[in-house]
Length: 340
Image (tube, rainbow, N blue to C red; front, side, top):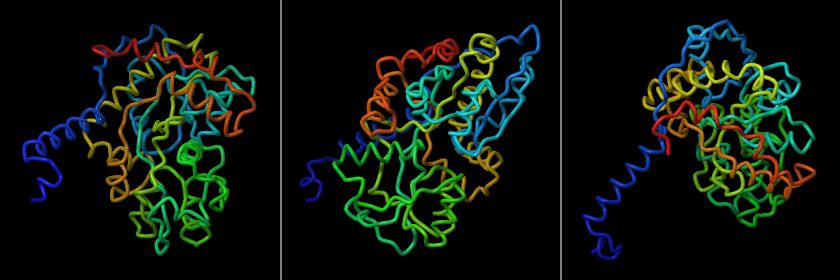
């Protein structure tokens, strides 16, 4: 019998199903309860917040209204890419914003210490998006293919680290550098300029939803040991951390509160995602199935990234010994109760 051949009894099958469901539930919701809403600040404080319109940052949508009640005035600044938000933070143009999960070692290797990481935002499996009509079913199939990349981006780091861990030569495919936001990747794929791309949501699901491409589920590159599955990081300037710390703490509470609400309700997440990025629900609904809201980034992962980035030649020196000092999750921990 088939069950005997697989050595799995009906009872074992049921237990496996239950355990899988429990693991999925744990991955979908934060492992902590958020502390009560903090008191309003005695005097108004303005926070300049840099944001990027990507799906996993949809909790940003309701932050301003919550902060208004807490006497924090939000001055929003939109950026197309994490790299642009990072530049604004380093120059002090914004107080707090969303950047790439690997940006700390990058800026530290450049000699800049004005960036302080606060928390991750979400995790996701990452699949190569392939143009319709092009067959990529296994890692060996990427050989000779034209793959669109954003050099130096968070997804590129994930891809490069995965290739290294799998022993796949980077030169086995043709890397096509694409500048600008995710729309440029979508257009390049539709024109046939590339066979596949490494990108981020909602642009991945946008291509799949329109029928112009598909997810190559055997080409998953989001869980390398060196880089990890984190999709982004909230960071502040060291100046803002010293002069506006209480306001930043209230921003984090507002963000985590919105994040927790959306993580518990996929449809609410899809609706907020749709409003945030301006895409229809037939794109955002499948996209939210790929994203687990709630940061998975920690100091150990950042140190591993620093080591790997140096090995890849992305940064000129290994800063893994000092990068942990610039990841300060104490504010987030102060807002948690029952954390583990």
